Image (tube, rainbow, N blue to C red; front, side, top):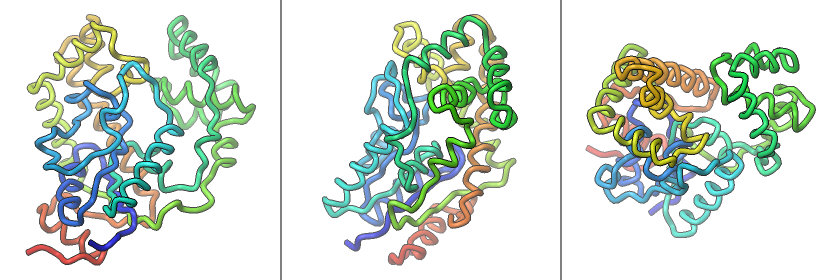
Length: 311
């Protein structure tokens, strides 16, 4: 077995990267390191589109099901675990495929940013979360407009998580978000990675997203969220996950089930659009047409990494 550079496989949600990564791993004797901020949680299976044991086809997956959904988790913690996992896999003579849709997780692994120095203080975050609970998202967004108008112009007022993070950076560092990000720009790559990204035309992708949400509901999404929510098993981070916050609104009586499903489809499409925008910034990425057959996509990747193609 020949050792390969780190293979990074990304793509928007529902583009088929999970199944492609598994088939590729079988061909090149690789293990998969997940870069998904919600699949790290146990019991959150349907809503995160977590591959089942059967779907994994015996390929070992890492950084899936490692935390209780009541726990919070930072990108710094993820980066540290991912680096250690990659080193362990390589030490055992296996290749590594890093795949997932959380682009910040991907960047934390392949960039030279030292995420150990990322500013974080639970007391500050709790203060901001309490403000959100007491005064609502508009109050937080107005705060951000006052102290960091540039960041406010880049963040939608409804994206509470990002608003809180921008406020948190200012309160902890005294810098606005852009100044802070400029100070932590990567200097080098940790790995000699080969970067692949799946692409689909927008109409096809959106249809796949809608179909996947329908399948999640059929497979028991509502029941999964209800069990976790009513038993207080979802922490603040987990409750903000796609598929969970929408169904929680239904469980609270804020929305009908039909409305919750419609909003979930809409928000997932918007999330996919943001992923596409992020991925297109990477000029080194090799674009893979996800409308092609599995064998054609595999052969293209195998050719790029210098492996024998399949018939």
